[in-house]
Length: 107
Image (cartoon, rainbow, N blue to C red; front, side, top):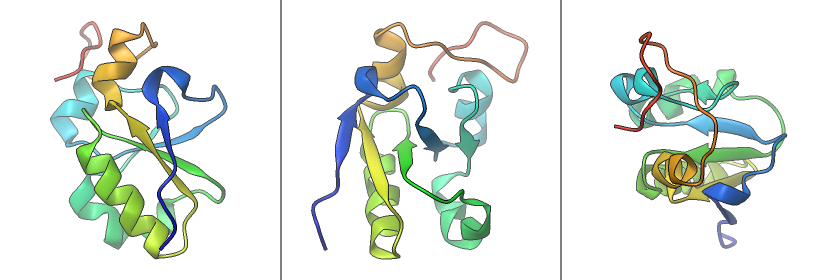
């Protein structure tokens, strides 16, 4: 299998298709606007929901997204791991939205 591409969270392209593999409570607290949310454990069952093209996979710190991106790559998907995850994204001043009515945060 080829080496998995990665990009630092602060360098995430503005037009990236983002797959967020965090759990529901993490997603609700804060995420990238326009991202697709599929928790890691559900990815294999929800492949039909993935858009065509390259996917930038993100989690809180980069570990779960690495596993998801590698698994998807092994199944023919074009994936990039977002290094540092949402923690690094937030630390770099990246914009987020929440689903819980509160100020977005990474938990």
